[in-house]
Image 1: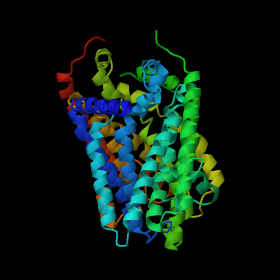
Image 2 (image 1 turned 180 degrees about the vertical axis):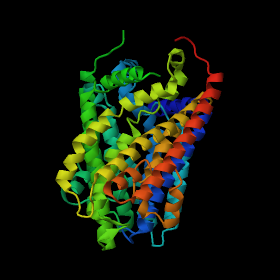
Image 3 (image 1 turned 90 degrees about the vertical axis):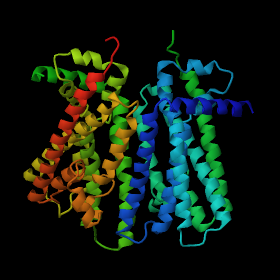
Length: 261
Length: 270
């Protein structure tokens, strides 16, 4: 309850702060709109050459793309500002200010900055997903859509966990720009249907670096149904990733050297 | 700005860049490997689905080579991607000291930008021959001195064009409170319309005709296709001429906005 109240304070501060930067507010909406158009346009051009990719036709690919755009919008709204600031908090010793507060430091540094200027984009992506599902010519039952939504939320959680775990390398490397860049490059695997990857790479992408679970596996569950083994797999990977994050975070704090006077 | 000062700014910036070596190698090797792996699997799936030897004028081998070169040459065109330093100078007031320097701001910053290219040029020099060794050159691709010259010209013009586009957008910072989104938007749009995400020959013909008049093809499509010999000399020359015209246009726009912006700029302290 205390954490929920704290989050409501974060929201209030974030909305009032975003109103100070009005140009940025509109630029960001415009930027994300271009990002959505580019992603849909990419698959539009690709499917003008072939009927299916990895077993999915254009209508299925559009739902998949809409899924990862929604995931990206949730990340941009809830986590991204915090993630971008984290390496500099560690390097400059500003983490001190959060360590002395009577709440979980990980909670604070992960959620304190809600990007209110991305909130409109979040609503836009929900609209894109609703449009993509509505235009789908096949049958999609409510149970499948509900399973898709739950798995997509699990994908958001995994995205956050992986992203912050990469960034925590700043405790040791001190320059995390390269690692941050690496995460974004690895994330590119999640922007294509997981069926296109073969052999051990596909195994890696659903277990060790579970980026296929962000949006591709949820879309797979939507079209082909969610079985118990897949559900258990997602839960196990999410728990494993969270435990890894907690471990790296505690190790990182031990290595952390405050730089403040 | 004298050539000696230009060189001094360049060499100082280069030394700063090489400070974080772990960062450099992560960016260089791992990013490249992943950047190539995703298109490789995607296009393998596309070729399987198409059931044809060529798609949009490329064999699978040529397509893989296209992406390798687009990633490596594209990095040289874009530079370090640290394209917010001009707007940061404006926001933080550090522009004041540059205004006192006995050198123009635009050439000073361009010298720094060129220095930031060094890692990308090193990556191209190291990974380029390695790729040729690992995946080999398709028989249909004949790299000649002429194609190398055309590709280098396209990279040089593309680099100047990308910088000028970015500079022009960043000078909006004189009026707007945060222009980060504009820069990212330009990069995202350029990746699709310039041929980094997908070769431009995959687009419908009408779209290709329109894109030929935009500044984007010179960023990725033109250097790669010139090197692979996929563009005729006339096509490459027309592309370069269009890009040069865009350079002139953006240079004029940048100077105009810069002059207007500095009239209302306020900086406190140096």
